[in-house]
Length: 182
Image 1 (cartoon, helix red, strand yellow):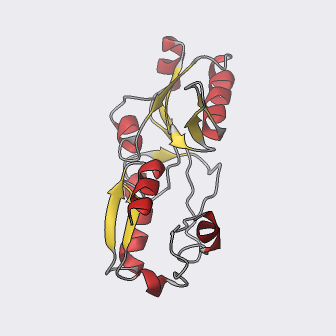
Image 2: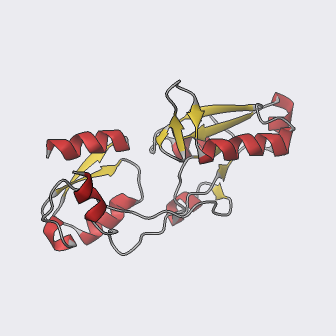
């Protein structure tokens, strides 16, 4: 199976996803509270994930800790709150968290409701399959494609493959389960 996964080229050229931080709370509020509340992913290795002991780790987790160190003088002055794709921006807008560092792609729709930092990571979109017969997008034109709910990839798939059946999933793990189901 993994040979097939590695063999499929990037989808749609390269969709550049720029997942920056989204900031909502005032610094004075954060300082008064004594800790930063950060929305993070816990199922997106290596950006944000749970290790074998259940602890949150990853690049975005380290960014959150460094931000707490820079703002509050203590890298442990941070409360990490795992969120789903759908919850990321809403958690900031609704004031549930101070900032989201959770693989968020900048879109014009999101920019209308939240402010974004400079990008810290560039990403692309790829497709994986268990079939060795997929050689081009035409081979997927009427297939089933799992896409993360709340992902900016959804619009690209709908545009490029309007005949494909979209299967919404909440995590990459769920996408793998769907892939193995066929």
